[in-house]
Length: 200
Image (cartoon, rainbow, N blue to C red; front, top):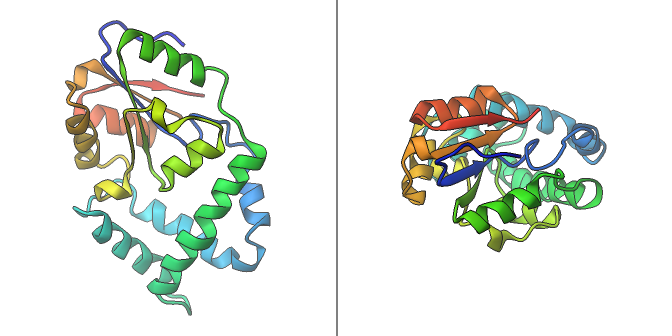
């Protein structure tokens, strides 16, 4: 992978970008056969809240779990427990057992270190550190690891992307976002005036 000239920071998406996520949905469903309605509610709620900003992590999750539980027999407290104690640990396990980084990931990290380029991971899901470790990556190789919910929303919320740039302390035009989705990763980059590279 060749980086554009003048780049001082690379912001990587995680799921679908650092690894090929083909097969992950099937494996997650097989591991959640007793909770398919909750799994569907999680996906629908995340889609409905895409691009929204709520100010803080707790405010986001409160709205997210409220949306997940609406119209169901379980409440948002149960939805929260399932998400953090069942769903996310299962995703980490699936990554550890079945997935590995794309071939270009480790060379890119080494190239960024050699050239003094900041490298960060900005994900739409939580458990960023756990998922990187499950993929066999060293979390110390990145200068900043964060999820959009930790910043108060979901991609492509402009406020979340602005917080990433503020933490890195790099100008937007000197920052390259890399992701597998133009509607979330690409829009995040464009919202703050950063460059974008699509992974297909």
